[in-house]
Image 1 (cartoon, rainbow, N blue to C red):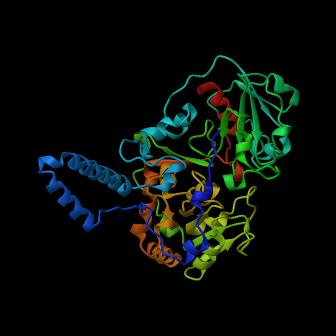
Image 2 (tube, rainbow, N blue to C red; image 1 turned 180 degrees about the vertical axis):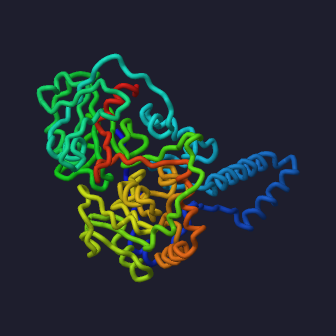
Image 3 (tube, rainbow, N blue to C red; image 1 turned 120 degrees about the horizontal axis):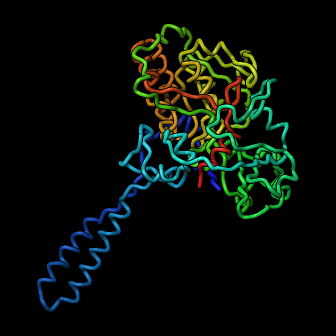
Length: 435
């Protein structure tokens, strides 16, 4: 069961708005150096070793010196507290344009390798599978079957496998090959069905960050759900069943675009943001936007901003097409948590996303190369505002953030605004391809 503690990534209002911040590559170090007097005493002690009658003393001094050296080297080595969460940061031995280390690649499921590395791995099974959606059918169908619209869509229509069926009948719990339990509305383990046997795959799913996993359960401690599930189905790359909001795919060499359209001229306005959740945020994104508005022109749509735009899920906000930059600020700073704010409101609309959320390393693994601007690369909102305004007046520099479009494409997989959603397809693929 994959979990994530976002507390290590939280950044306070003081960090974001007032205090200078270390650069992204800053790694805290502890240094331990012998004092001058200690060095002097050591040299004096070694000199005494020249006397053969002091051999015992010499051995003790040598042992102490070696121990001091070993301790000094260990304490002075860099330590990165961020490495305990998400993927460990390893240097060298990178795989593919995503800059994944070999260890990170090995953490991907077979389905993950197909999705993120575009590898042709895994073999479809010569059998049929039954997937049981456990409770909350109407809520789940709105997105996974209707895509927040009025037309029912076949979830396996554009899937690499077609040997699965979805059922909502609770009686199928005794025979289903997989049971999918969505964490947003579950009330807890006491509502779970009885497992039919060791071969039945239980999958827990969430599209929210760990900060907002549970909407209704009184027990929100993820540890209390251990021992029930075989697979996780989340936005994270290392889930057994990855369901990201979007993906970046590399184009074949014969499909690369020779020229780019002049997006600088087609986008006359500077920056926009859209937000309907004004309260549930652990990273102070709303104060940051308010601060930016004092320094540059930011058109703020939605309940939090005042400007009106058509629906958040059902209808596209076409006015966002006019902006050079879109503030894609997530409600949590969590590993791999990158939502439609980036994939649709920015990249799909050919704007440059200015991102707040997980670490820059997460965005580099998932987004097209050179496509985004991370707030953590700037000491203060003022520095960020000055940079965005300078890009908005420099055509060549701005278009550098769109060069990726010649070799890559982004695909939408979130089900909003009529975009495809592949949750049921991914379960079926995982049942076929994963070990």
